Length: 160
Image (tube, rainbow, N blue to C red; front, side, top):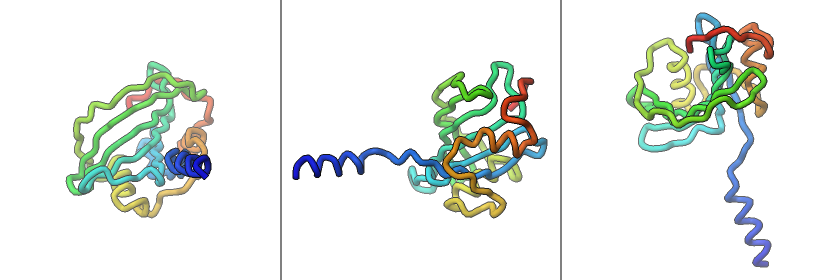
């Protein structure tokens, strides 16, 4: 009986690893596709929501970064956000960087990718209505396709 209880306790303590990626926005210049894991939206304080996001770029940065996995926090009352963690990946999804974010608050600009992300996060994943579900798989290939780029190409500098 004790072993069974220990097994149940272990099962409930392991965080779920499944993702539920949504394509929330594509930049006007079609250089960045922005995905949010809807299942990662958690309240982290009054009016604060913490999430996992993935930005996919049409071309790679000078250091080879083609996408970034992000942990962000949005202030739903103050229209601002901050980076808590950033991990950069190449087109082959090899990890190139892993760093803590600055934690400094940045204002959300109306109509920007961050505005679409804030709407999605603060609505619990219901807005904007144009957000499209992509399921649990890594969103890199879907992002490159949405940007009109094959997943293995694009090694030019990207200013994002």
